[in-house]
Image (cartoon, rainbow, N blue to C red; front, top):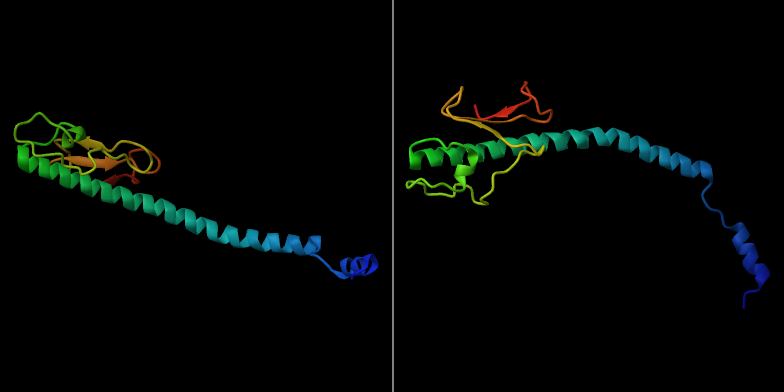
Length: 137
């Protein structure tokens, strides 16, 4: 049986981490995080742009299918889901919703377009008409 004095000696001889050792480990973790975080954020923004490009291609294909069936461009993107036109064979989007871009804004649609039969674009991350827009032309 272990006596109280033997137990006290064992506790007294065991060492834990010092405050300096803990601070050094926290600093190393902080340094690693500061090097990795910008890359992760940049990849996240890049994936939003890739998703927007894919959605614009999907919407463009749907508009083109609508045009082939009905003989005209839809007046707005909601006509891809429901229309009263007799030649309409939709819905032209499988989920039957018009997606928003990853920045939670509606896609801009114009028919007739200035750059083709129709223009479809997202204002991109900053929401302004500048070189950051993602477009179908």
